Image (cartoon, rainbow, N blue to C red; front, side):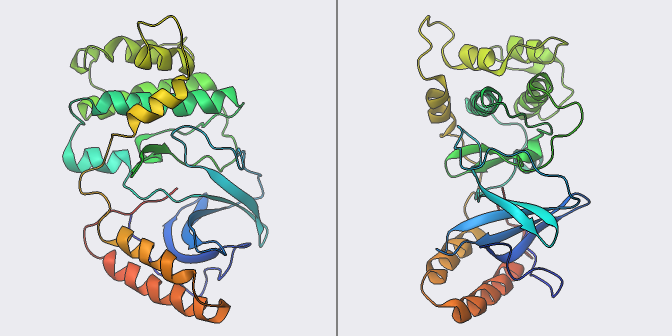
Length: 281
């Protein structure tokens, strides 16, 4: 996703965070790239409407973009998350086709680990799609937890969404017949898409340790397996600028930081005019 430069209508600060560019804008939220006081890069989602988001603040989960903070800015709730430097799964499949080799299994294990961790903490995603999974430098990360819980959201709905995503990942189509899936994933996707799907942990067990009676730390094992999944052509263009911005941003005082943020916003806008990918959270 290309970064757009900030306009006069965009906030100069959101809580303790300084936006540096706009990543997305829609009916439900505006999403900014920004920096905290130490210069760490973050994603800031400012919601429309008064509803409070459901978000596991400060709790790291396997294969989930960490939610760092939240608050209210000008009457609008906002959520600050770890910045994930990579394209969405949807963008990768659209540009390069279905994932091949072990990558569909890695993606399935990573997202099953994310859902297991969230569900066991009492959190549901409620809107999981291939657009909400970013392929970062440490593997896939589920994003977009910071929003009000949508109607009908449940762990079962999340698992059915997982089935659709795995089908899309392995075949390039969310409506492909089960026979088109790799044999190891086929029964799991069929079960997960049913009216009474298994729990995410059961999927994870069958993905990571199908022949073992001792489950061990399934989340850590799944995250380690998913870590090998990379997006083609990852970390080029704007991502390098983001790292440079973070390094420079740590040095000056407040007045100079204003100038640095403006300068890098202009650079990001120029980079966004070329066909490169950027991350979000």
